[in-house]
Amino acid sequence: MKLEAASGRAPPGLLELLRDLGDGENGFMGTPVPSGEMGLEEYLQRCVEGPDPARLRPGLAPQTVFWMIDDDGVAVGMVRMRHSLNDRLRAHGGHIGFYVRRDRRGRGHARAALRMALAELAKRGERKALLTVATDNAPSLRVVEACGGRCDGESVDPESGRRLRRYWIDLPPPAGRPE
Ligand SMILES: CC(C)(COP(=O)(O)OP(=O)(O)OC[C@H]1O[C@@H](n2cnc3c(N)ncnc32)[C@H](O)[C@@H]1OP(=O)(O)O)[C@@H](O)C(=O)NCCC(=O)NCCS
Image (cartoon, protein in one colour):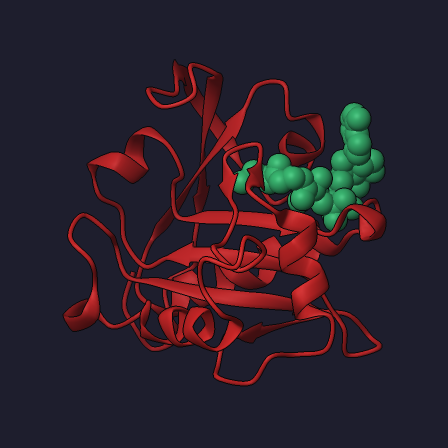
């Protein structure tokens, strides 16, 4: 499995992945594609602009979208990686969110993808990653804890009313940069 940053090219299986995600699950938001509100091309363009602070919509942090590409070249999951935190993300969302297609779960894709996303975040100069996980989301708790997540407390998500656990993961300094 590898991570591929979103570009104008749709990898095989992307539409199926976005349909599977639908309106979202466990706080990982869906996309406007399955409802037809936005075409795939326009959505990909929006993903491509996500990292650029100059093109951001108000209140959003710069974000890179990655597709999880399996060994057959098929998109089986996605990662949203925010480059920095704002107040909203501190309360809910954190730096990184991930989703794996229902029929491809339990194969270690999320764990591998989180490790790779953490390395990407470290390259951008962040020293700690925040992940917020619903206390009843057992698979996601397993993934975050397996990747070194340290829980520093719980809070109630202001949007959904669900209990969330806040996890921090220390990131290595980028090569060549002093501690
Ligand atoms: C969370 C999610 C990404 C995990 O994807 P995945 O590829 O199946 O994850 P992995 O295979 O890497 O690991 C899943 C872990 O959860 C465990 N698990 C799965 N179902 C479980 C359950 N019902 N209870 C306890 N543990 C469970 C697996 O055994 C595995 O742990 P292990 O490696 O220690 O055995 C996937 O379930 C998903 O997309 N959920 C919806 C979106 C979501 O919740 N995203 C996270 C919030 S941002």
